[in-house]
Length: 429
Length: 151
Image (cartoon, rainbow over all chains, first blue to last red):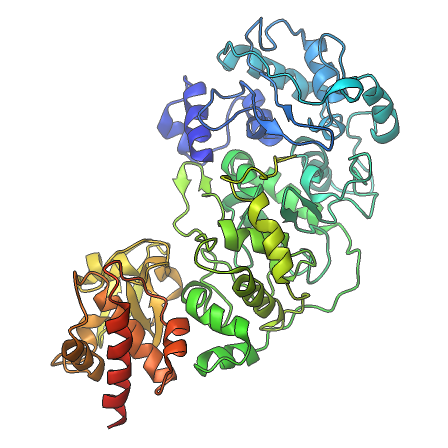
């Protein structure tokens, strides 16, 4: 579905010919580059809508809210915003009229953006984005809970004010990576667990909770720290950079909300910036001591015998084996291995259940659609079969993640079915 | 350049590594018995054997297959008399025929691993889709082929 937004994005950039927009060089315009790095479009657009005109429904514990029109239309957008107004919204979470933004806008991360980048971003929105007249939708948060001033207190409690300050004990690349990961790319919005007040439990490398992995919107955003099995401890810096650049590497393929990031943001960054992000992420220490993943072929032999003993192995043999292989190694980098994949080893099985039920949205990196996508098994497989197959892969080939229950699959079915009246509204992208 | 041995003949295939094996077989090698069905490894119409294992060729990138041995429906038997093909004829399985080369390739690989399957084994192990709904005949033919191969 992001392909439409991507296509629309190319229209927005009007002056940029299609061929140029698809080439590998990052955007030459600094403001556009910053907008890419901030992935503004992922939330401030809807499928089939005009870029940056807002309207994306986002769930909060109190009711749904809608992203706003950030095109330079003077009436319905931000056309009347001065640089100072814009700055106060992006880095401070306060709109021009003085009301506090909901922290679905990742301003606690954007607070780290430099003055230069904010100015470039402002120029991009004011001069390059075509204005769209489209009124913002009111939030569905009712009554006293809709009063916004308490958010100012939230900000005092949970926001670290101030532009990113380079850490002297790290090199320039690390600091650039930290600036991008903690700030513009706001990775923590999905990958950092949140507290009772929906605040991220850590906003930078000094916190052990930062990027520790979190469950959000029926996906589990994986741990990005150095944990050897459930985190990225087993990935090299180059593998990490390749993932950010293409959505693939020999260890995994992107899914869930990460598709938005790859379709709109990280592949457009320069190699230096992507390498900097990878170097920074590789420096985050593990939060749990885990033994390194070691492959074993007992499950491979069971599958190849043609007489699978575990019920999940039979489901795997009928439905999964032709792509992911009897050896669980997939067809890297196009079809992800299940053996040793951190998303498979994740303690929370939400992403795996979601993927089997609903598949992943298409990855369209720089206009090139991905050839291989996970199909949907919502209709073909029962709750029991999905639970069995997932339990099997979580225990096969040296994997050691807890089993998945039918009840977990059953619970996930209606909330991830777009035709259901109980479908959850995404909180974050 | 990727080297594939298809039905015993070596081919140098000059395609992008993310090209699905199906298109290497149909377009580069020129064997069109293998069909495109759904394109997402769900229906099985494109099933071929890669190093003896049944794989859905629409979803297998050739990048990882350098040096692999591929068998397609054309290479199953020199005279089209493989026991599974014989059983297919005897049971008059195909209706429209589109899925059949994939069905046969899936059945051959399945019977190699499970020479005496029960109905339940077939239902679990053969997940190819036939939109004409020939499943009853397919199942009978697989049992018949198992008997032929035993004899």
